[in-house]
Length: 97
Image (cartoon, rainbow, N blue to C red; front, side, top):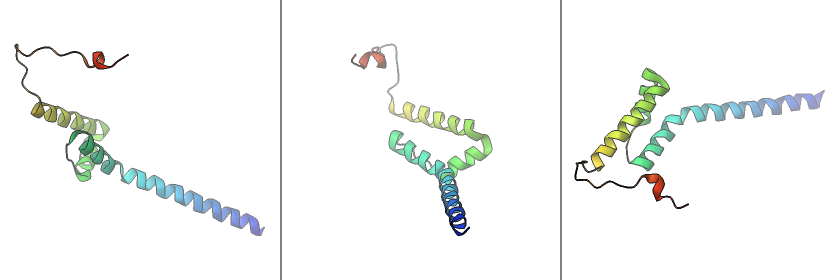
């Protein structure tokens, strides 16, 4: 009977550890998203801003925010396209086969 109590205690400790990992992973999603965005695009957001958009508009709202920021950043860096602008090759043509 004594070994069964030890087994239950070990299972409870494992379950508590997994639950803790689950909570930490959900709490860190906004932080990881902001790190990714800053490193990949240079756009700086705070986790608080991402959480606020998620609370107001859900996953689609965060996706919309991401796309809007990407478009704004791209427009800041890109030169204006005029009729005299030479055409560039499609990105797929740049990959060597």
